Image (cartoon, rainbow, N blue to C red; front, side, top):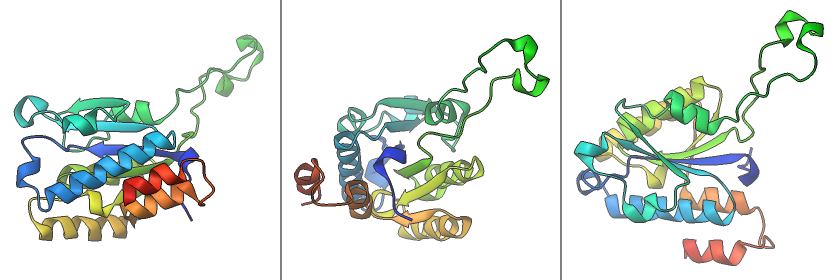
Length: 200
């Protein structure tokens, strides 16, 4: 199964100014998050960011935040809040027609499947906010693709433990380049040269 740009959404978890200096390999991780967000913009993939307690930890890296369609604040470690879930799923459409003529079970708005069920996710800390968010998104029946080279924790051990647990729970573990090239699919894509420049 390959990623499809038309079915994907990108969620970037907590790349915050006061947190990033303590993160293992933080510069490489942030650079890959930037590449993902730039590729997403090129390929019309929606980008959502989250910030954990921004009053204490500051906002996300400003350049990265500027690439997000929306940034949500949170106090819970998991970013899979009602607000994020509403942003990831299209609103249910009310049933049209004469309500009196419909059977009772059709009178309520019907929940739709997500139009973009593949959630490409990356962030910090991998073993806390990123992992809890990814696990809850799996529970909500999204396909979850964790971009390993755009995730980290304060220690390498915690980061790797998160990846082990996420893989065991059914998340796909990928890299930034895997995501970009799967979104493109071939070298004849109109955005190929621009996307390739992001990788090089």
